Image (cartoon, rainbow, N blue to C red; front, top):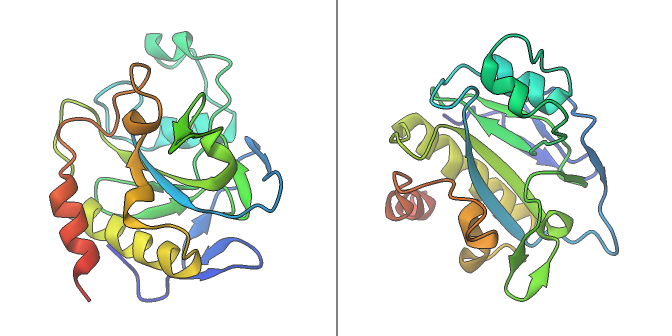
Length: 189
């Protein structure tokens, strides 16, 4: 859930009150760097395991592929997200929002491709087969409110799931993500 010390420093792109683990899997945003979308993802490594250790290692580029057979299927994956929300609602940051995280892959939103260029990626620890926790919805809503205040071009129709920008290729955050629940949290003060 939201810590009252969360606040975004738009100069550094870092969230005060949140640990930044600083992924190497990012680069500069092209062009004017305007942030105008949020992409919500779900991740678990291995699938349906909700520990964050392997996710952190993946985003940091140090995943030991010998720890689990599934990891051998993703040995050279270079991926990151700006934020990760664990099952208890704890927020971690991996990439400053001023930089481009590598979370969306081949993607398109409202006629514009390369969604990484103009979006913030938020990963929820979870899967297509499991409901998300109330703590995750609360933390996600709190984070989203902060980001929408900092970046007014992020409107309700530009807060999307990975499946919305990469249909047929991605399914997350999946059928258990309750969009109505999330959006109702956004309306609460």
